[in-house]
Length: 568
Image (spheres, rainbow, N blue to C red):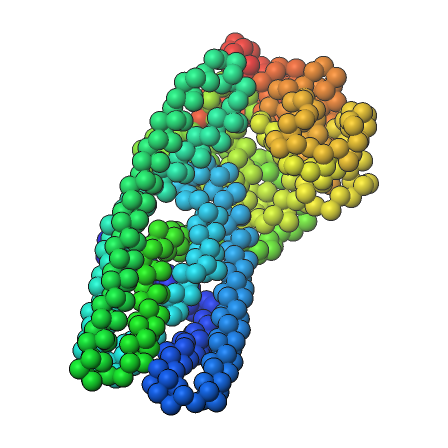
C-alpha cells in the first residue's frame, strides 16, 4: 500500500513538472476565483448589518453592483480555468498517444499483450480527470484554510467548529479512498478480462457458430461479466455510502453553523449578517472536499493510470523509436547467427542454434512439421520478436536497430493470418501511406491481382471492412501479397503464402516470387506444399526448434529423401 501511495505521489509530481506552466497558471486563476468568492458573503454581511439597519438604498445598489462585477469576473476566470484544463488534457493525450499506439502494437507483436495494461484506457482516465470537475476541486483545495481563517475571525467558536467539520469531511474522503482502492482495481481488472473475452469471441465467430460453441461461450462470458459487475457494484456501494455520509455531514454542518451563529447573535457576540456570511463560506470550503470524496473512483482510476503509464518511459521498445537507422544501401543479405528463443523462462526453447546466410536474390524455403518454429523464425528475422541469444541481421545490421522507415522501404511481409485495415484497397496496398499509383500498379501486376481488384465494386477505391470482412480470404491474401511487394522491397517474407489461394492464385504467387528473385529480392517462405519447393534455390529444415539441415535445394532434398514427412 505504501509503495502504491508513494508511486501515486511520484506520478502526480511528474505530471506537474511535465506541464508546469499549465499548473502555475491554473493555481493563479484558482487563487483569484477563491478570493472573488468572498464577494457573496461580504455582500450578505453588508446587507444585513448596514442596509437593513440604515435603510440606505444607495448603499444596496453600490454593493450589489460591485458583487455583480465580482461574480462576472469570477465566472470568466472559471471558464478560463476550464479551457486551460481542457488544453492541458489535450496536450497530455497528444504527448502520450503515439507512444501508446506504438508500444501497444510492438508488445502485441511480441505476444506480450497480456502483460500490458490497457494504456489507452488509462490515458483517457487521466484525461477525463484533468478536464473534469475533480482537477478543479483539487485546485480549490489549498484555499480551504483561507475560508476557515476568515470564519475564525468572526468568532473562535465558529472557527473551531468549521475546522472540525472540514477535518471530518477529509477523514470521510480518505476512508472512501482506502475502502474502494482494492475493489476498484479488481473491478477494472475483471472489466478488461470481459472486454478481451468478447473481442476474442468476435474474432473466432465462425468457429463458435460452426462448432456449436455459442451457448457455452455465452455462458462463460456471462459468468465473467457477472463477476466484473459484482466487483464494480461493491466498489460503487462503498463509494455511494461515503458520498451519502459526506452529504449528510455537509448539510448537518450548515444547520449547525446557522444554529451556532444564531446563538452567538442572541448573546450579542456576532452581528446577524455573520450568520449568512459564515454559512456561505463554510459551504464553499466544504464543496471541494465533498466533490473529491464523491469522485474517488474516477480519481483512483486516474492515479492508477498515471502509475501504469510510467511503463512508457521504461519500455525498452521505445528507446530507439523515431531514431534513424544508419545502414548502408540494402544489399539483400539476410543472416541468422545462432538464434535462440524461449517464449517464457523455464520453458522448452522454441528455436535454438539456427544459422544461415542468404545472399541477394536467394529464395529460401523453410520446411518442417507444424509447431517446429518456422513462423517464430520469421518473427525473429523481422525483429518483431527479440531472441534470447544470437542475432538476426539485414545488410549486416542487427534487425532490432532498424527503424520503421527502413522496413517500409526494404521489407515485404505476408503473415499467415492476413488482416487488412479499414480503408480503401489502395491505402492497404500502400501500407497506409499516401498511395503512389505507379508503385501500386507495379505491386498488383507482380502479385497478379490487378484484374481481381478491377472487378471489385469500386476497383482500387473499394472500401475494405474491418479485418477485410467484405472480401474473401483468397482476395485478402492476394491483396496482402501486393502490399508485401509494394515498393519493390529487397527482402520478402512469406509465411504460408498459399494457404487460402486457389490454383489461379497460387500460379500468380509463384510468378511473383520468381519475378522478385530475378529483380534481386531475397525471399524467405514457409512452405507446407511441396509444389512451392521448385521456386527456391535453398532449403532450411527445422524440427522441434532445431536446425536439421540448410543448403542448396537439391542437396537438402537428397539428404531428406528418406524422410519425406520432414519436408511436408
